[in-house]
Amino acid sequence: MLDNKHEYTVKLYQSELQLSLQLYENVSNHFRLFAFTRAGNIQGMTFSINLTTERESDNIIFLTQKIKFSELRNDDKEIAALKRRQKQILLCEVYRKMGFDVTENNDLILGIFDPNERKFVNTSPESFLNNFIAVSILKGHFQGNKGYDLDIIPNYQNIVTLDTSDQNISKDIILPDKVLQQKSKRIIPLAFRYKVLKRDNSKCVACGRGVNDGVTLHIDHKIPFSLGGLTELDNLQTLCSECNISKSNRFIDI
Ligand SMILES: [Zn+2]
Image 1 (cartoon, rainbow, N blue to C red):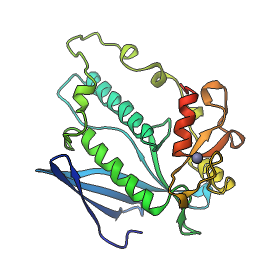
Image 2: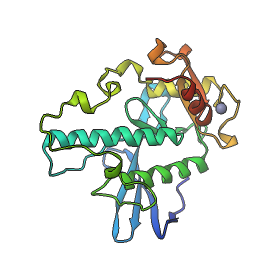
Image 3: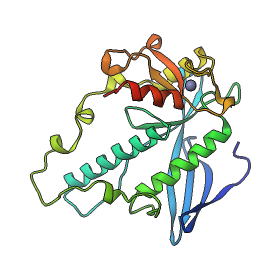
């Protein structure tokens, strides 16, 4: 898939964004796929994903990224951490609305690759590349000091304003209840995701479409976790991103 050089120029508003993808192997044989971008004078690495192999799952390769921010600010340490957390919540929600598979643990799942069959089981190579480029551009925009501000997307600082003059800001006030809950049992392990995709023949159980039809597949709780549904194989199903979004509009899964 990455035998060729992947370089793209994306027209955005009145300027251009140049983007290149590169695959690296680090010292411990782990691979990372990087997106480098340049917008005007700002350039740098804006996004990367890990290629994770889980032993319990027949060496299936999961291409994932934890969505988080690490930038330092001049603010009070605690307030800076809260701002990063708010940004994380916002970007994860943007990705979900766009149809990306973002777990409750803030892991973005872009690709699940079966090396035996030499193919993705949750997406097509074309969708994978499209999605990788889209998430890289957005992450670059949201990164602030490392990335760039794209004119056509609202600036993060304008979306979320935090009154830092109040030194008594409490975490309980700023963070939604959702964030404060213990959610560990809600998280679907990567190995489960692969099993559910294989069981459902890599097809959406609602509309029957698969990766060859251009959809990206997600793993979903049939009965939402918030309504008592468990994270076990019987309660998990494969849905395409479109069916998953329309389902979450019916079930307010908080
Ligand atoms: Zn569907």
